[in-house]
Length: 322
Image 1 (tube, one colour):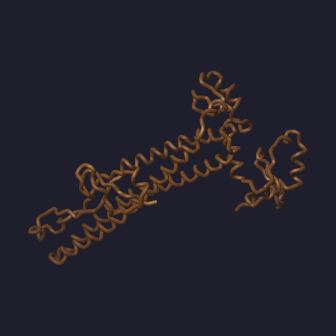
Image 2 (cartoon, helix red, strand yellow; image 1 turned 135 degrees about the vertical axis):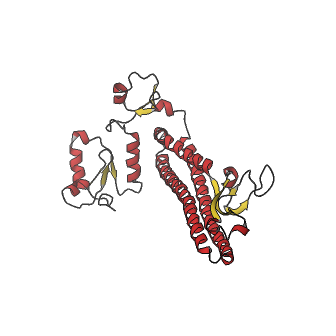
């Protein structure tokens, strides 16, 4: 925890003193001790600043800071945003309207734009919850797939042991080649799995961050803040949905399989090239509407709607975990 987060007076800290702060100015983003508060109020230009009692039960520095950032103009931090330019798809202050948007044809006030739009944050929260759950489902699927890859490696090693007792002298060459392929291809699969897990972890963290912001703004009960938050994070929501969509489209069931390149009777002559390792891939389709409401069971495969069998080439559907 920094000295700033420990509720010390920022002005006194600049002078090398540690004095407990009692007030926070949301306009200056500074904390003040009683003496500095008095000095702050002496200046006419600072008289209209909003001061908060840091010891008050409802004081939330993060909420105040984020609310201020949300309503302030990116180009002119001293001004609040009051308009939305639909031509440029951006919010702006009065100065921006004059300087940058005076020729725009579709410029409306925030009050007018958000007046008839309610429940924006509820919709966002619901969408975030689904994205978060879907990300967790994919993470659980990838983790289960990683276990299956490790099991495949063990099964292949067992099969190699069977070959070994038939071709003891030639086995060393075979083992060296096949194990190298196993490690190479399993590493490739695991690398893809880790990449997908990392993406879904980032998606989960982004969802948690946005949900935290939504909670902060929801408590303000201000429709303009609700609209601004929804406006500013809509692209992030779209991006997270696209990430989920890409993962769903690229999801595959992968495993390792030992292929026989030659007939058994020819192994003695061609033992070094007898086997190679391939990756078995099966397309996976996720039924999230049903899966999100149940627990994840990796060995519970739903019957195919087309042929009625538990496992087939048409689809593989799983129950997902929390």
